[in-house]
Length: 336
Image (cartoon, rainbow, N blue to C red; front, side, top):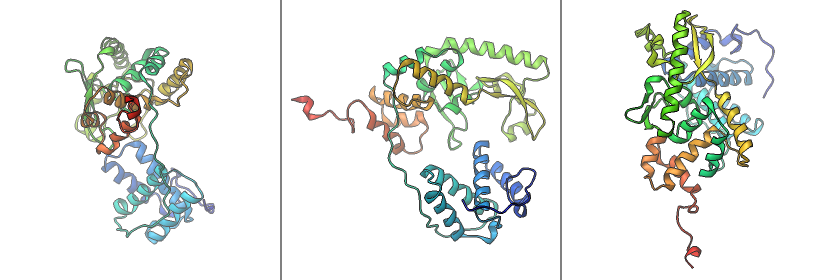
């Protein structure tokens, strides 16, 4: 990246001095008005900062397509970033121009990083059993939800108590990827363990309430409309963290959900103990969920809906890893 000359920074240290704090504040306001996740907000702010630093702190209103193309080409050629990373940077800069500065752009012809086709890592059923046998406690509960319901890791960790429909055997996922809601099935095998876990969580919540705590973060609109909603049992995390934190904006002490690294570390240890040589992560359980449903003969549209994919083409990738061959067909050599 082109070296940026030393310049004063705002207290937040996110943008060069001449474009902050107003540009920063306007960007954050637009992101939150659009209900972007905090992770996306952090990523977009980071890429906008890098874009401005790459051009030595010039204000973005002074730059257009040529400067954006230079930045994106630099990421591909010098930074050697992946296609997904470059696309995120591209979307962040587009957001800056279109949503924050309200400036329309012409076609941008930057050198784009290529994304080679990759097949997902999938565990067979014996491998799933072996990995789960080396997990226990909360990590095992989460892992069974990933495999049994097709959840993404963060979707599982962000479940609220009211999202579990024990009677209907359903799980409601709110604001999943793409800010979409969906419903998936509930694995009966963990019904009782999960109910026992919730009894423990409720005692923890009651203990917090007795100490003047017991609040969890909510979307801003809900928090403003229902000031006491963050204390109610139904809105508590199914998998709460062990500690609290103070929200910088509100000054309220909240309990966060369990961090992803807890499950990732437990999964890695279990994979090693099980002797599985595949590079399996918590997300591998989601891939295995989809593949095993297709193996069992379920319709691909049903699997698409359970996974929350917008396009069936995304779900089609799992037909390439079935045990029946690349296209899900039986080889003619096996009929000789």
